[in-house]
Length: 158
Image 1 (cartoon, helix red, strand yellow):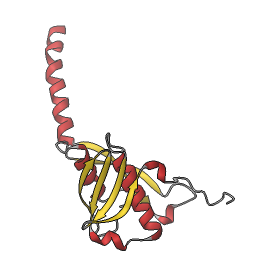
Image 2 (cartoon, helix red, strand yellow; image 1 turned 180 degrees about the vertical axis):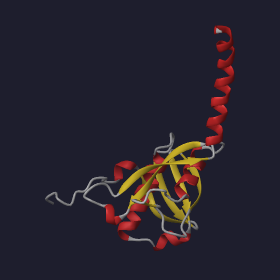
Image 3 (cartoon, helix red, strand yellow; image 1 turned 90 degrees about the vertical axis):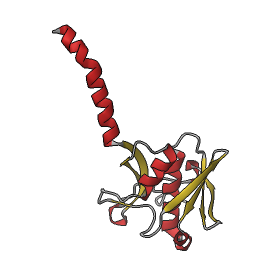
Image 4 (tube, one colour; image 1 turned 90 degrees about the horizontal axis):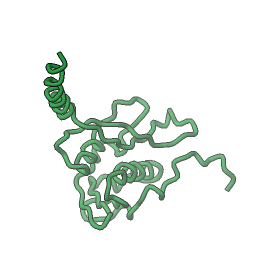
């Protein structure tokens, strides 16, 4: 009985590995919290997203970042019709190319979008900063996670 069980272990291990490949892998992306749900907490929140396991780390994050959310309390970080289109990594800085329409996003929503972009992509090993570009124009200078305050500071004396 023990020999039969030991003989089955490699087969079970291969089956488990195959199942992991079929199910994909999860990438954590940052989303905007719907204004209705903001209760003095963070304006962004991480959400795990399943992606194609064959994709490289940055391409997987790009696919996940562009996907819709399944959480009713969260919003996609970029507005409808705006996507992250491509990237280039050089010296720790990820140059992220987005749809030109992102240039029209301003104020609170631009800050939240930039924050979600930065937190999502800086979580990847080798990415220290992210700059945002559209059609050859730099929209946001190189940002790192330390450039954002993630807690509600409205009650602090200034």
